[in-house]
Image (cartoon, rainbow, N blue to C red; front, side):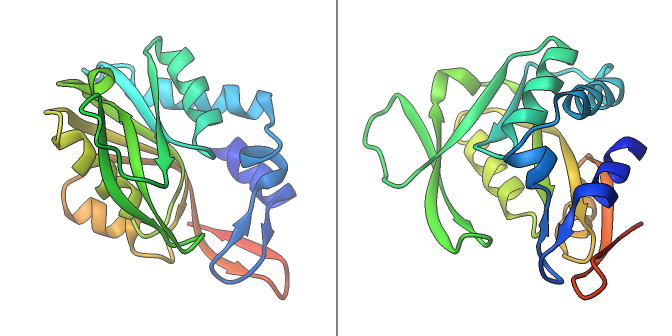
Length: 190
């Protein structure tokens, strides 16, 4: 998606060779015009898909997922990152780990929100692919199906996109970053 790549070039900051900072427009300060374009782009891609709901993981995926949900006229379920395991049968959980923050948590939602549904996951970044795998594991617990995966920014220098593609996942990425150079402050695209 050209508009997203241009915004990354303009405002994205390569902090390290692994971490790109897009807080100026995507996950702290949100550019609503860009989010509308992102939502419209996801809608154009997924318009003919047979699915019931969109899911995302809090918190950085919320803005693009809301706009995709609006453009596709489908409900959005936000999976929470809970620090504790719940005994309550109302909830479904999946143990997860954040490579970015280095902590363990439980993906959590009310079972009835996704029970038996066909789901598209919308998220801000794809790096290792572990979030996707954990979301799918959570969905399987309530007989829900992961139909497709929509990602704003894929870090192609990490294995997530390749791993998911090889496993047969339907993955659509709006921007593919191939390299981050913090010395020259350059972000390269594929």
